[in-house]
Length: 80
Image (cartoon, one colour):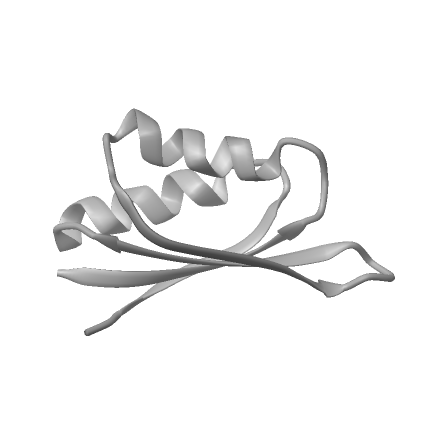
């Protein structure tokens, strides 16, 4: 299945590296990645990541991404 992961996080140094590290440890290939700052005052960034993965692994992945200190919220949806 293809999934779109959306992540809200603090805009801090190495946040992208930590999130990518979670995917790297699971040997997951990123098909698409988009990052933008959505609140410059509070320094909040929004990540949109598209990957192809099985559902049970997807649920574990989201739990691991949410453990990254800077991440405030992570969720996934099925995509085409």
